[in-house]
Image (cartoon, rainbow, N blue to C red; front, side):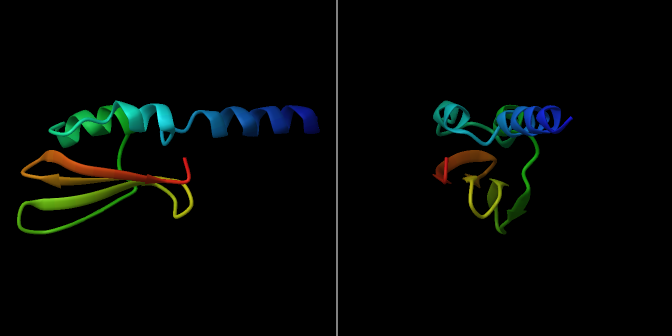
Length: 80
């Protein structure tokens, strides 16, 4: 039974959309909807005056995308 639990945990960990392959698909000018289609719903967003920064993932493993006028203007990652 423990073996099944470990397999299930490994499969769930592998299903994360916060990974290098998806980060490599990000392009400048993508809309927030396009980014969310790739990464899913953001875990947090903040901003004002037409700009917004959204984070997918945790403090250890994350993708961060900065938007201006609903277009990706910069992105970075940590722990991928």
